[in-house]
Image 1 (cartoon, rainbow, N blue to C red):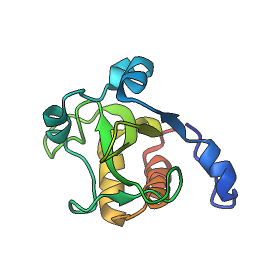
Image 2: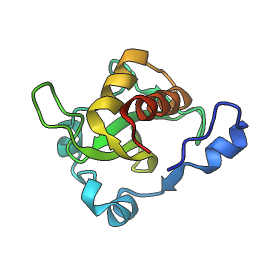
Image 3: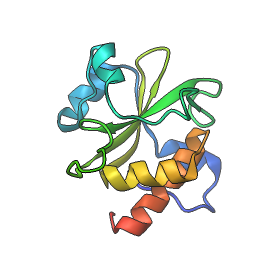
Image 4: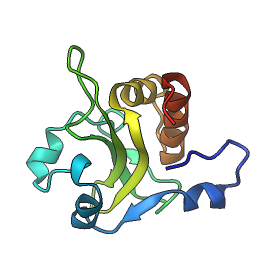
Length: 138
C-alpha cells in the first residue's frame, strides 16, 4: 500500500485502501498474514482498539467501529521476535477487512499507534505513516 502525503485530498487517500468484503476473501489474498476465522482465535491476537471502545471508521464506512490487527500473529509483545507483516482494520460487527499497511514492522506499527492513541481510522493511517518513516520501511 502506498501511504499518501498529508496534502493529498481525502478521496485520493480513501482510494488507496484495499477493502475485502469477507474474511475468506482477505485470507485468500493474504495467506501469509491470514486472520483467524474463529472469533476466539481472533480475540486472542494482540490488537489495538482504543482501550476496548474500538476505532471509529471515518474513511470507509463512517459510523462503523473497528479494531486494528497486526498479522501474522498479532502485535509482538516485549521479548518476542518482531515480524514484517500486514496491518488491517476489521469491523467489530461483520467480517469486512481493510488493509492499512503491508510489509511493515509489526512492533514499530504497534508502538507508533499506541504512542499516538488514535481514535479514528484516519488517525491510525497517519500513525502508520510515521512508523514507516522511522523504521525505514517502504
